[in-house]
Length: 512
Image (cartoon, rainbow, N blue to C red; front, side):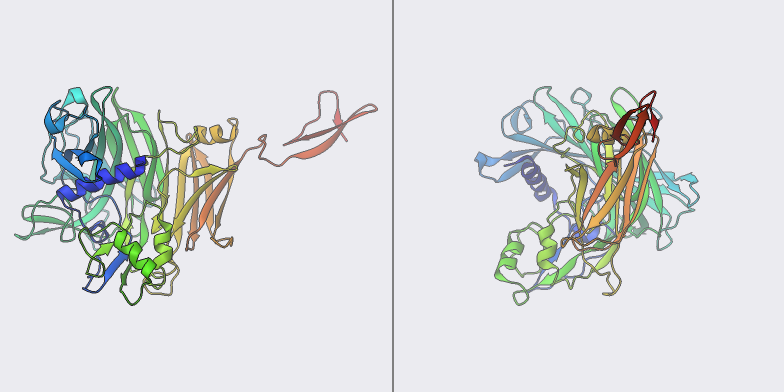
């Protein structure tokens, strides 16, 4: 089993233990339609922003059978029984909510939420409390922090699409056990900003995952998830373990990222960006409208566990898994049309740093790649033949069946990473961005390139789907990839031809 498959299996084992939410329904304000008997929904799920409880578990593959069993381990590695992580075959599944920072020196916490006006003016949101949640204890000698609940904020000047002004920040850190050091190492994080409207009633209860359309819930209260108003730009500030490095992916556009040292163990990471509109896929498959091959693919896919084929279940990959054949196989059933539009603000770390050494550096945060595509390959862009490439996929049409869905792609990376890839000097970098469809046709796109404060910003907007590849080629005056020209230089009767990028005559020679 490869690393990705093992991680997915562990995640599913934990999900089965605590209850798996219908992510297509509750990761955002778009509500999934009902799935009647005689059908199976084929959709694409959004991961992020639905956990209300922290989880610390050990997971065992029972007798290497592929059947996982999980055990609660809130105190970390106890060195005995089911919570002895030094045993072979025992994996950790630690998913912990960061609390709101209680002081100026607090670590491993959410420092704040800021909303940004169209003119660039930042307006800090007011912290109004945290959702009641299970608190797991700090175990400092094992590098585990005390967990908390989802942080809640009010921003009166920034109403959501329905007029509410309250926002939740759901920020999780993932830990794995390092057998060598006998400590837990932070391997990644996931953070969402979720507009909500408060509802109360006896029907609401604390849940490990969002239910009843709630972004969060506790006894008697529910934060009903709402859409962002168009053009909303938000910034979160978190203090997180400096083990968290490498790459992020996001559901953002026009994003910015800033990292500063906070303490010897924590960095302050600030990420800003505008929420994006994600076209959602949802279609009803039946015995009549699917082939035997399609039915087999549906039956074997993840989603609603225990549901038999065409019995009201919902099957889906997550949007970042890059399962492009899923959309292609069911595009016709979906009429190539999105079932709904979600507005999302989410960022998460990428667990695969890529094969290129410049892209796989784990000593610092390297960049963030963002898209609004229904489905995308949520790994670091490939660097092949001098180009950074990234694949996305989606349905052609908006829910009205007429308007084309328009794609967004943003890549923000350290300038020194770009220079490492190409062997560039510190001189300014330029780039060309192309969006090419499966048939080789160019997709119309507006591209943006700029370099500021040590970060290179590249973007493509307005392209259409189905499954285009986005390619970025960087150039620099004086580099091998820049265009070379030839000049003739003379010194008396001697002549020389000089071929270079921006060629100049040697001392004593003059250009003819």
